[in-house]
Image (cartoon, rainbow, N blue to C red; front, side, top):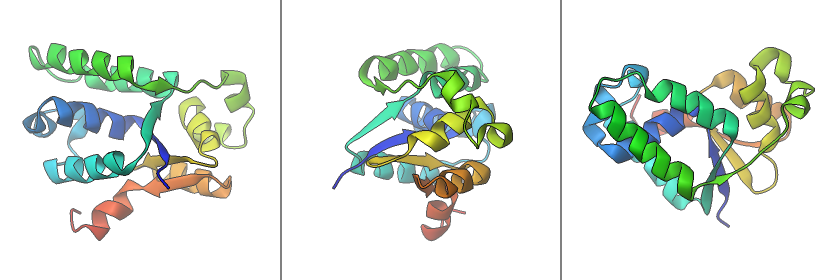
Length: 155
């Protein structure tokens, strides 16, 4: 059965930059930890899913990260980002709900929301080990992207 995915902000950034132009991954200041093979692996994960959903919080964080590159590439990336926003379902959770979760004090607002959102047929894909552990502790579905990288010989 296919699942719905939520990507953490760093992986959403990788997806946007890589789908815009693979060579931009190497020059984006916030993607120094990633490579084109990482993008290929992420794309495989995304393509196996039923759909990818986003949250306003991850969109905001991704928007902030996206700008760490010079023009004219910056405008090109934001254009791709706009297109993604237009075709992606947005999942909303009130900040007060996430702030009252057990994970909030350790992870902050965005990650607490992500950790609490990944139930039933929704799976989180993340590189953040603390977020990964909090999601598991909460009974959520989570994929540690770094484990996938290791299993595929990328790291």
